[in-house]
Length: 370
Image (cartoon, rainbow, N blue to C red; front, side, top):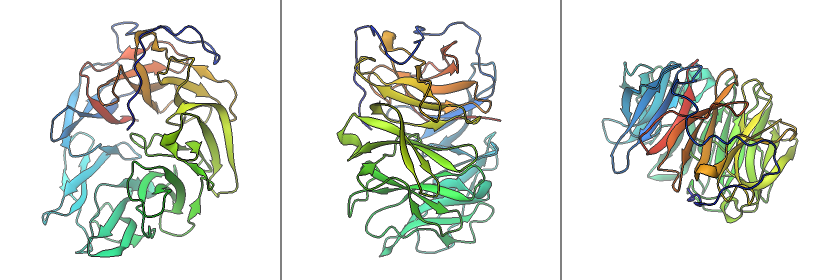
């Protein structure tokens, strides 16, 4: 990921509405309305750790060590993570939300690598980037059952590129995935095109038009589904995503029939649709924010843009994550490096900016429990 610029001067003005001025906790009582989970990566550590903080609390309860960011299931009962198989191939580890019941999912094909993945079809299946090291034509996205690893289905053929499964639609019937824009490119750090495919195959549709790209950002925060699964919000740029700081939020029809820019232009990394459908949260750096990424909200039609966080304390804000009731957001905040941050929360009206963790580290896969 790109390093966020550090600014020591105070923000003088903004054209995007009222700015909160809180630079730390606004009280000692946790405002969390729901329990939250997150994965922390301490610098230099070989493994991360998943933690839970209960509603109204600040105590961090360790759940389970992980190789990668632990992805919470749609119903909030399980996590998935990368895991090595007994014969050393990449596969998926599954465990319950309390850390119990850890198991390594079998790979039904003796030659495939199926590391990690994303939940699909409401948690009944996992969609995974897969390949056979001896067969270049095997690269694509594969789906299999979470119960026993069986029922293998190939969803995409990536050709000379790689496909990266990103997010299942709310009802579980479709899957968003990234494919590098450049021919013969395989890196997930490159500019990406956004596609949708049926969770059991078919219906392959490109959502970002030619000449427009998005990117893999943190826990796939650059994209999100509308609550009814008919539209997608995506942070995108004209041209290669990381070669410009003039990006926007776009709304794509999930069927590929439209792609419309909404809201301001700026150094935008993410686009997160609220569960109630009223808001899209995004982080943006502009001259008005002093070059720091700060948290903004707007309606899905681009109206009502307002800034929730201020960089007056020298901190940037990234990874906005909505609470189930759309009343609060989690985010990470730091001063110079997205991998040295803490988890904070804020109310949707911009009040009660609260520092939840006090261990500057890399944080991924922020999520709220039901």
